[in-house]
Every structure is written in C-alpha cells, then in structure tokens.
Image 1 (tube, helix red, strand yellow):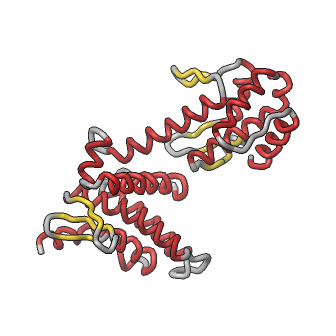
Image 2: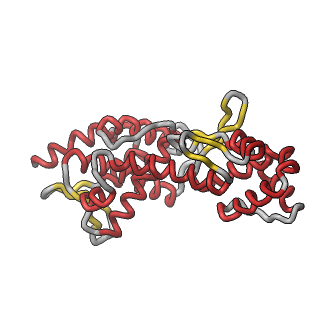
Image 3: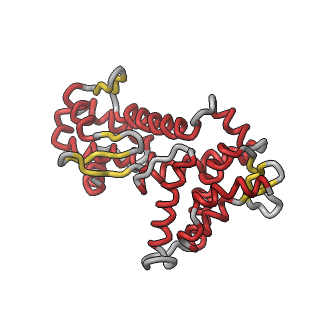
Length: 272
C-alpha cells in the first residue's frame, strides 16, 4: 500500500495538491474528491492507500490482507480504507452504525478517537477516571503522565506487534513473559539475530517494566516514585521494588527471571 500511496501523492501533485502524509493534508484530499469525484474514481485505491498510510502513521497500525483486500489493524479495531473511499466517491459519505463520515479527515479523526478510547479503557480497568488512576499511581503529576504513556505503549505494542492482549491482571503477566521471551530469543542473548542496542534495551525495559509494575501495584497497592538517581521504583509500604530493572533482566538473562515468580515473590518482600 505504501507504493500506491506514493502514486496517489504524485497524482495529486499533478493536480496541484501537495501531500506529505500528515493529517493536516486530508482536507486537501477532501477538496480534491469534492471537486472531481469522476476523475478520482480510477484512483480510488491509491487515495485509500494514502488515507490509510496517514492513519497508520498516526496510530502505529499495521496493514494486513483480509479476504484478498488490504485492511488496517489499529488495535481493537480493524478498518478498510478502500471500502471507505469507494463509498465516499460513490455516495459522498460512509455510515458506521450511527456515525456518518463525510470526509477523509473526519475518518482519520474518528479512527484515532476509537484507538484512544480502546487504550484508555484498557488502562483504566476498574478505575472510574483517568484522574483517579493518575492519583493512585503517584502524587507527582509529571511522573503520572509518563507512567500512563508507558503503560498505554505497552498495551499498544503487545496487541499490534506481538498479538497479545493486556488487561493489567496478574494473568496478563503470562503474555509479558511470552513477549520478553521472544525479545530475548531474537537477540544475542538467545538464538541469534539482531540484538537491541543500549538505547533500545533501556526503552523496552522501561515500557514493559512499567506495565509489570502496574500489575503489581494494582494487586498489592503502593505508588511509584522517582529515586535520587532517577531510577523508577515501586513503593509498597516499607518495601521497594524495581520492575523496570526486572524487565531488563528478563530480556537479557532469559527464562530464569520468570515474571510470574517475581510477582509471587512480592508477598515475601512485603512480609520481610
């Protein structure tokens, strides 16, 4: 679809419309469609590819084939940009339940909103609001924002990159165990292949470690804190845990650092 999207960019450029794969350019696509739907019809798939590429870049989604047609997976939802653009050209709108979409910019905004609702819902769990969740995480508002972003990134990456669903329950640590096992096996630590560099390892450890810590915090209580050396720690009563360091060890050292055992060991840490 990337090649088709590039062709669409060229076709639109020839028509005096400059596109750069940013959502801000979609009103230009809408204007082009409204002015010349008959001329746009032969280029419907290319226009759909462009719209899909804009959405993919915004959502981190993935193209896949569904019944012989290209579709886009953006997390909990899968969309068909080709079918949408075809309806837009033929009828001037597309209907999704009670939602009427009359342009590509509106379509992009709607898909992005669906993804945000999915990520917010996955993160909230039993919390009534994002404010309540952030307050429970830490009294540091800036740190709470980082923790929310890292936790949502973990849910997003698990679903789109690893085909795993996360819900912040202790059972979901089995999914994290599988994911970190695959990362371990893909690097120099396991069966060979390209190993992550230090920056990638640190980023991966922080994302998955934040998720692991949130599972622990929601089960055992406690709050996150930034130590003097800028290390993230989970404070549970008088005990202190370092789930980000644990995620790093699981990636580097392998299955000997099993995450379910680590979760269970929290009880001993709290009692000791």
